[in-house]
Figure 1 (cartoon, rainbow, N blue to C red):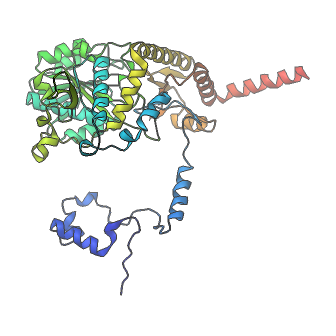
Figure 2 (figure 1 turned 180 degrees about the vertical axis):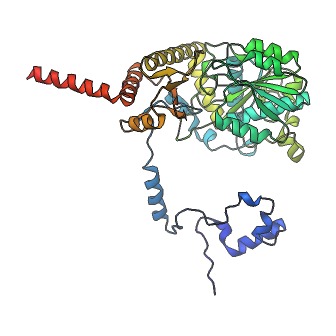
Figure 3 (figure 1 turned 30 degrees about the vertical axis):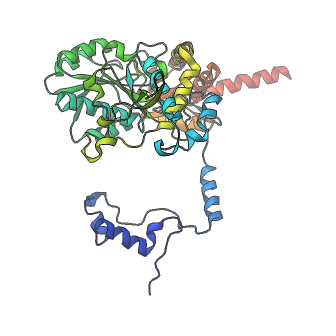
Length: 471
């Protein structure tokens, strides 16, 4: 008799549970259950994972061994960005979100008071002020989903099916957005010029089938779009909606997209008080003007002030709940699942702590650090900047002859993560307020040596001469 192994941590491996689940969905076998999965996507072999560890202490030891391989940006000098950033998180942010009424809450209405609703209302209000918008949603999963939802909203508003992407988009974001919108939208990419949108090419393509013009600013390469107003005017003249994907970190000093013609502004709040945490705590925002036709297309929750039966008293709760995917369920326009509410509270605490002047100071510092890093790296023989656009926090450098992979390997041996590999000769470099001028100087020196080892030999020779003279 064949003995069926029941996994200690996976209940549905028990035969009786397995059978009960299949019966509940009307499937005779697992093959029936997965019949809709295309054959080319099915693995047809066991997963390459370790054998089950029935003893909990053995499992704990195994997991600790895996975690011990991690290295944080506190242990290594990091210039990695590309969507997850090493910004400083004030201690008070962690202190607030670790409170049990926030940390353990899920959707919450049945088993908690309305303090979380007020905290999220305050977050929305602060974000709206920063973005110069009127309405901001409770955070979605991440900025990828927020961008996809913003474009889907544009498709529903216009009844059209084409999106023109005029910026360099983070490849992972582009992939997820295309996947999310593929049933109703076709995304066409307009090549950039000098790191920003090619306005002439956009104007030549705009026509009656375009639902939205999608702008990423800062772009994947950190370029700030300086033609947003002109892009918006051209898009609106063609009846298209302007959807901007952005990072809110710079809007203490940069002009918000809403003041330049953007209709829908989306992005991720990871830079506002959220740690990197080996991949990042992420949450997305969607912001629109106070126009019913835009607000009614937002599928996610909004919290606002609500009057009570007692004159002069008010509370906090859902606004226009009947337009949400939560209310419509299977009849919803699109599905937005569990809100990343805890991260919204973290961002709200961060914004309240920083205030307008703090955000302005931070924006100016990021622009200055970025410019300094560009200047230092571009001064290295054999290295050039990817473009001459204005950059915030990130930029690309190109190596004339050196291979990026070789340079990255050489610098990792010195405890430096120099950036993200874009292609064989292009490196994406990121600096934040946590990156000091001396950190940038160290990167520049290490890059120069990795590109031209003879320079290090010369430095060593000079050092040896100095030692001889000292003797």
